Length: 435
Image 1 (cartoon, helix red, strand yellow):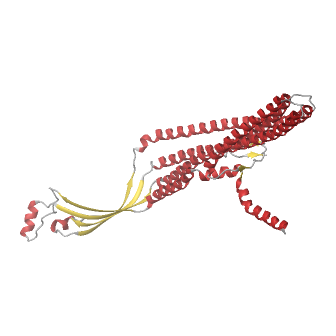
Image 2 (cartoon, one colour):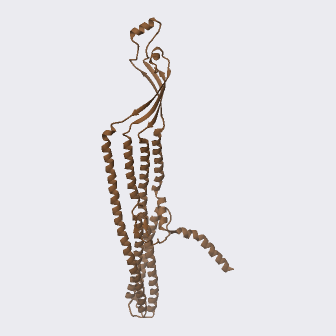
Image 3 (tube, helix red, strand yellow):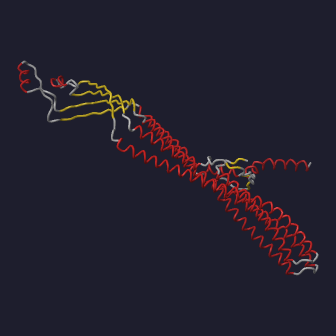
């Protein structure tokens, strides 16, 4: 009965701990995703989208009729009148023609509707979209740089974990040999100095463990701040085969340069539209005095309703004088961006080639490291046997233990550095690696 109870208790504990264990294991991809989501600059994406919508909406409103309500009251020293002789003659006939009043009043409603703007509104919408895309890609570049910082912390923690495990193995070996040397010292086959030598090594390795643990906590704290989550244990990334590198098209820096080139081309379209005449319909209705019927306004001070309809054409020909130099300026900007693109691709491919060669060098080094570790382990075991039989001194034994530990540490460093370089290569090539 007790066995069954303990069994069910064990199952319950495992079930409760499974979510904790699963959440504690963080992969490199998860850390990169969490860092992007947690980074404050991510909030700019929504602001960029909203700003673009406002700008595009404003550009589209150029086709909405423009309505203006205005009022005016004026006084002028001279107004239109009939000749004085004609006025006197009309007065003798009983008709009073005082002329237009010097104080004039008007309440007007003006309506203007664009019929053709030479493509300006379309170019403005395209320019707003291009600038929004450029802003988003600028944000992408910042977040892509963030991934590199995450990679450095992630592999730094992995290296510290590997070194800690190796140092712990060395401590276990020293503890075992300390017990054996202590037994030999009690039996008179070893000196107290031999035991002291082992104890010094034990204290030294404990210092290394403490320092390693402190460094690991510091690295984990920095990574936790970046991803917004506590960092417990990390999953070793897969050893992706570097293979052949495709064209570097996935880098956001290149996409940003292309977006800037697209913005320049859109500015050219907008500049071209400014050469075109603008045609529109207009209407003006007003209530006031004088009205459009001047003769009636000369004989009456009554307010009247008035309406004017028409077409208007505007053509700013001054843009022709600067158009050529403005186009040349934009073309110079486009060519400069093209040079920046070529330079980036060249440097990027150069860096990728160096990283690929470094991966292959480390891969070959790891093959030698495996053999070195195997040989150092065999030499250490032989030294332990020889020390037990009094063939070698404690100093030699400790040296063999240190040499094995160094070989394991070197192998671990090479392995983590190779993985880090592989993922740096993926980062350099925009994560476009063919196996």
